[in-house]
Amino acid sequence: MRQQCLGYGVLVRIAVIGCGYLGAVHAACMADLGHDVVGVDLDPGRIAALAAGRAPFHEPGFPELLGRALSSGRLTFTTDLEEAARVRVFFLCVGTPQLPGSNAADLSFVDDAVRSVAALVAASGRTAVVVGKSTVPVGTAARLAPLVEAVGATLIWNPEFLREGYAVRDTLTPNRIVYGLPDGEDGAAAQEILDDVYADQLRRQIPRLTTDYATAELVKVAANSFLATKISFINAMAEICELTGADVTQLAGAIGMDDRIGKKFLQAGIGFGGGCLPKDIRAFTARAEELGAHESVGFLREVDKINLRRRDRVVDLAKQVLGERLVGARVAVLGAAFKPHSDDLRDSPAVDIATRLQGLGADVVVTDPAALPLLARLHPALSQAEQAEDALRDADLVVLATEWREYVVMDPYDAAELVRTPVVIDGRNVLNPARWRRAGWTYLGLGRP
Ligand SMILES: NC(=O)c1ccc[n+]([C@@H]2O[C@H](COP(=O)([O-])OP(=O)(O)OC[C@H]3O[C@@H](n4cnc5c(N)ncnc54)[C@H](O)[C@@H]3O)[C@@H](O)[C@H]2O)c1
Image (cartoon, rainbow, N blue to C red; front, side, top):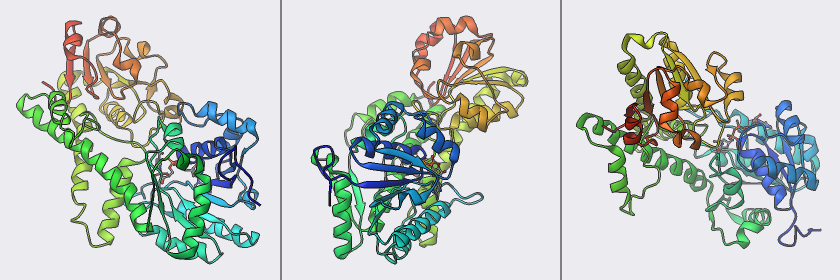
């Protein structure tokens, strides 16, 4: 018997396997839409925090959403997959990190989750739909589908496009929903059930595209590859600007006015990081090599190299401005997270730069409005300051590494009073050079004279 879900669509019993940045938000959003959701994770600390209404990571709007979903009674969390025995739809939201020593994705979490869910479905004797949301190399769904079908369930690949910092909004109102489906009746029946889950989004005319598995998997990695390429393109132009005296911010503004190019993702700086773009482009190159198509995405290696070179550039600029004084110099690094509105430190350019400057003998102090607790846990050797003012005090060099608003709007006159030497490397090209220079600073941007 199908129950109504908050006045529209059908209530679906859902399990979300893996409650990290993606899964926890997805679970809370699905409960907010009126579904019954159990979030499952292997990490007992994470589950205890979520069950107590504490967000285990920084994501705007998520604590409120989590609180609301928990008090509705429609969202629970557990480490015990058995508690999901009566579920109709299993969302797979486990990690697919880079394998150590390789560019390829580590699919062991996805494989384990699929095996566990299949065993549970087999034991329950109920029909179910298994929905993969993790980012996986093309061919993964086709490889896993027989395992799922063997227990009478159906596999859909439904890649996730959310952006950290906007995860709640992007989950509730994505710009598109993609289903990678198997052929035939089973695919059609499973699609109907997933349409029930996303009834609210579909009612709001959010486009839903149905494809085969391979296309759905590729939509995600192709989108991330394109975004990474756009960032590295403008950063490559920044390198040319540095050699010619041109200004990459003006260049980006001018080319971005062509609507075939567009302004977004043309901000030159210290490049991309995080838990997605770097490992996704590397996994794509590794998969393409397996397919004998390494030339097709060979450019992604350059994209990766350009991205990493921008971090080198900051370290080189620090060496240039401080010279022999680098050893023992106090360097304030503003920002640790790979981008603002997140505390995610995975492959963060800011942390990489801070660690390298510290390795060269600088006395580095890092500040960040959201990521310090995680920084203390993952990088205990880096000194940190709660307040930007404390990081700036007596600094010989300031590196703006993450464009949090409070750093972007910082008053250069006030900041100049705190530091020992007013030198700033604007790693995100977000400060006004003329203003900072007027306030007495030596201003160094990336790709700017
Ligand atoms: N973070 C993002 O912005 C984002 C956006 C789109 C897609 N993705 C993709 O989503 C996937 C998850 O990313 P994330 O950032 O949430 O990762 P994450 O590392 O934050 O979370 C993964 C979670 O899965 C749990 N887990 C692993 N194996 C499990 C199992 N068998 N059963 C239950 N829990 C298990 C881990 O304990 C962890 O909490 C990745 O493939 C990523 O590429 C992430």
